[in-house]
Image (cartoon, rainbow, N blue to C red; front, side):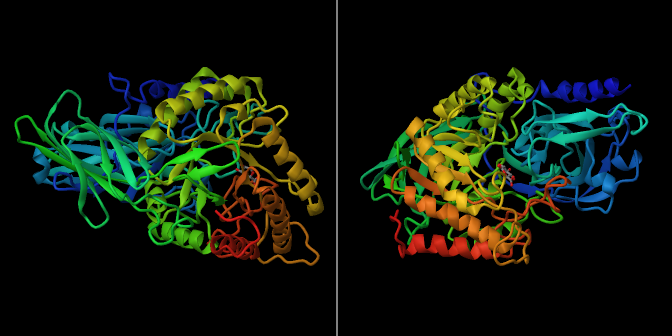
Length: 639
Ligand code: GCB
């Protein structure tokens, strides 16, 4: 019985996974341009309150047997009202919903304007965690595997134009050995202790497995056949002249008769143009994209590539404006350069996590977070441990904050996480990330994973392939991953361009002994550099701290301990900075939710800020440190 359910759950997941990750005949992934309105395009969000029903049947399969997509959800049970975008977990007061594992169903109806009758209409979901199947008016239109990246389909033929339509989304948050992040479903067969069929989801990462439609659901239009499908922009510069190398991908077979490409500066002026779908433009006196700590007068300078295409019959014209920045990234054995100037990462790690909404997109939260990043003096963050919302990435581009763009490859620790199936999925996710974020100047590195078991003999081939794959997509950005292993037996750091190490001396080892940090850390970091001769960032270091707990002398979990702990790390960072040390990233920006367990008291408390984004004493310490780096009022060398 148990095994039977087990097989059913996995089989069902696999049933539809086999037809995801569509590629074109030329091997190119479909474009994933962010929906933007223009003279030829309209955008309509379907956010708001949706009907919601979870499939609690023991097999988690009743919803498919009954075809919940075929009729309004309310016909199959008592629906709840759940907001989109948001995680569903912390909205209700029902424990069963919060901790639910399996298929959760969303539905809403919407009206499609009769003026859209000549348009091609695309349905895009910016992210839904984890596996999704989507129907429009009862017809399946797309599936997607993965919880953090957008997917879309042309739904024109499924819609009633000038009438009411119904969209249904079935979401499964089950993590298996081949999902990213991976997890396992564990069945308990001892019926003296557990009811028949009892199972739990085991996680391999340290954050709550929030689920739901986390970002916008959007309908957008393009012209029917002559539309811009994708834009790929690569930049460089020589002296004061910028170079913009671009490729415009069109829709399928339809050739464009006219293409017009303009580079538009911040004042709205065209500073270069071409009539080719692929070309290299030069821009004299180019404004480079700079992190705000390197150029405070015009940080995050963005141009737009304005693309306009006209169909052969001249009946259709599409216009799209893609923001981009001109900047380069380069690493040597000891340094990291942005636009040929040494850059030091005054960093932090983040999560897309906040009360009630879980991982749901929230503009107020994004604004507050960027306010606090600037208050802290942060010039760089890592999207630990999954790609963040495009609106967050936009803010980074616009404000000149550098991003290490990390995949959801967190918790790859067991042998069965290194299978061929996992590898293919990992590569597909990296392709999707690249597809979405490739034109972002803020993104300086791709991080393929966090803390995989990189000493496992299976890791070497697996990550060689993943990293080679990323390089084949993008030769312009360094590739890395965050490592928590030892330099003596790690097998993957040999492939990266920059070493990222996560370190918790005096927390997970020698707890309370802050006096050991400097000795152990210096020995360790020098060991990495001596072996691999690459620049190094400490990509995590931190101690759990309950806001408002104080004790002098310091004691674990108090604000005093967190401050003392961080200060000890800083002494070593400052010592190594002139040598090969190029950045530091405390764990974490804010407290965040985890699974329930005896080592986490209502979540992970290593935040410099509380989950409500208010500072602990450590936030003032980091702010003081980073501000001194910015103003140069410091005895460590300047960027
Ligand atoms: C780590 C992980 C991070 C955890 C953190 C911790 O090494 O990368 O996801 O939350 O440690 O606090 O244990």
